[in-house]
Image 1 (tube, one colour):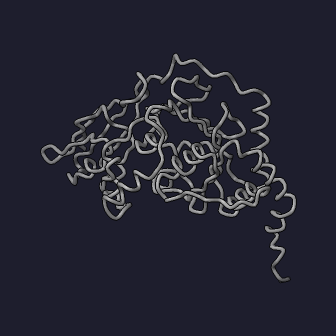
Image 2: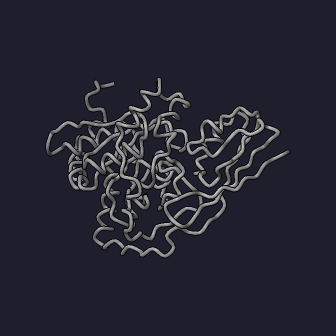
Image 3: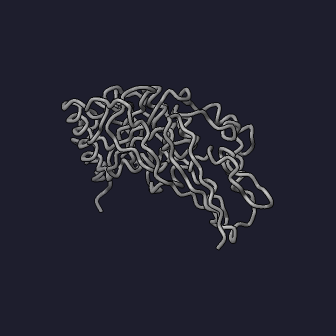
Length: 336
């Protein structure tokens, strides 16, 4: 088997780097050019009928090229790099009362709703702030992958050079948005939108933070939060999400105006909208998070600003005392 090995170092907003090796199996490569077309940051160029990584320093390790290759001729492998922010000041540990409060919230959500997965504490660390004592992965992950890992019990901190999705990384304020994504071109290549005008409108209408205002994303199980979260994410079945919305409205009776599109689900809909608006939001997921994580087809997502949690927990306890068990017992069904 003939291969070409091309080493790529990752541009990031820190002086440290993550390194990747790009392996191209020339025996399998059909010279279709999809890797060049789909690479968000123009790493590849077709030369002499074969793909060549002409700008390896721009590589994100997102593996879009490998995912689109019809013959699986491309592999992108991570090599260990120096730890980012090695000399950055560490944040103080959470006060004991905060730790106990978050554990209590997590237990209430899991016990009353019957959640299988941990609620997730999400923190966006502003540029220059001290960093919590949370592990940084050696490889790049998509933000949605880190969130799904946190629901299973992992605690993950990712600076820009650990984020594998250029789109979500820019939305969350860690980097600028690559031109091929800003123009909407990639959405047309993926057949996600009808034409370039629709793609441009989708990009322009979604919210995003100013580039490089955030140094890292931190996701942990809520019951082991390492820093004060701004948003709590709950991965839930529709019935469980319904009770969360009802809990939020228990004392006010107000209806919810939800903002969802099916695009950029975890970065925009579950995280950024609750973060910027202070309002609960629901997401049905998106192409990226469903294609790159183990989230089930029967699950959806609820993003809750942390300031709303006391109201939601109190309302949930009230509903859990009678309404939830009665509903689940199907009390209005005729005798069978």
